[in-house]
Image (tube, rainbow, N blue to C red; front, side, top):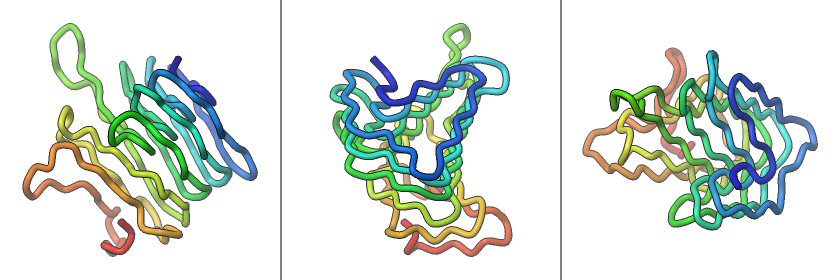
Length: 178
């Protein structure tokens, strides 16, 4: 099973705020807490301004907290608040897994999952960039960003001089954010 707490597919928009909780889910697949799949037209959007995603386990999958998979359409995660911690996944995939998708007919890349950060979230689980499969995946800082603790990032490709975090024009990059 994928998405033990929330499974959003197609053209879904999920607004996660206030005291909302996704916790203690255990799945054998991806996204134990939240699984996001862009399956049609405009894709899937996840907005997190509060709440918590904690204590979820993806036993043999990626994204103990959140998995973003843009199968046929985009997946965008906008995180500006809340807490993501204490989640576990298979291998190094313990937090937020950001992947891409390849067209099965022609082998071209459909899209990449997008992680856009702003505000003051607490993200203590690793952000896992699947750059070994999709080298252009990155984290985008889209507004004033003051995380409670530095956000850990795992970049699978480890390509020299690869940009893994970008800041919107007008924002000053701060290496202490990550």
